[in-house]
Length: 425
Image (cartoon, rainbow, N blue to C red; front, side, top):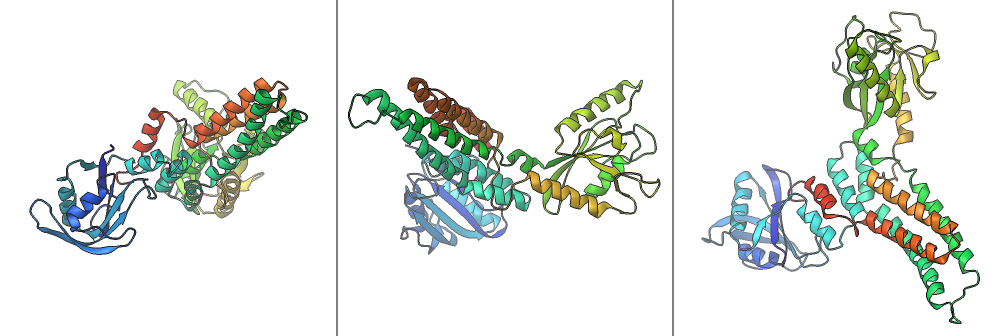
């Protein structure tokens, strides 16, 4: 039998109200031991909690009782809504520790129990983790869609179609001699269905990356030495994050600074100045790292010659326009502020195309790998004329869906995921 667990599930005290959750087979007995009675299911009741060891009053609270399995964790669940003072919370937690078989929950243990009891799948768990970590409105919207099962429902629809195709293949293989199994046309039907489903699955890979949404759009500032990269970086992030100097080659390594512009997360990277040759070994390393940053950039701000744009979509910036004549590019002065509003507007416009819209979720790398595997097995099934091979490819496709929902996940991966949750969630 699983342990019964408890934890403070609201913010750290002091606060107006604190919520303590209890989940497990002994939840009812524990709540009754504190309050002297068990309220009606799913109805809040006022109760004076008393320490079961000495009968001393702890606090006058609201208590709620949720019998499983239709609860957040899939188990019997109780909640205590008490005053949020430190002493009140500590007193109730100390009384809870006196109950046999009751222990403090580990980080993410409530959510893990919900996953184990089928109340959430792995995608919803990951969405909840992203929601707890969300710092921008875009992150919040995308995480909420994932945590509420929008992607999971799409997977369920794919699985239903996949099972129908698998059933037809197995029927042809096992019962082709029976009159009620239509062998004629089955091959074309399965191939067409697998091909259509593969196309639909692949379309999901166009969804934005959750890592990009979480870590920010990678904006790399690059160009020759003394082009004004560090000054522009400081102006964009609103603080002196990079050293500014008239000495060429001051920036020797990549400087990464996270910042939010109009609610969108960015990761700005200042790089070493690029030039044809140098005898400084450290500067050479810095330029190599600058080129590596350019390769992984989502957006490049190029503060150099237009003929040397590192890639066609780089934004040509004519920095220091207050000090020198501008021939090409967006005129910018980080000192006077000229052109800064236009540059930020351009960055936000570019970012909007890379991030999910208000009704879109974002996929993690794990999910993208699973979706790609599913699409590849479906395509292989559509291309094969041998039903034995088709059956095997469809079996692998079903396994890919199981890995996406978590039904085929390893304990090691689950341990890492739930360890990132806070205690009480």
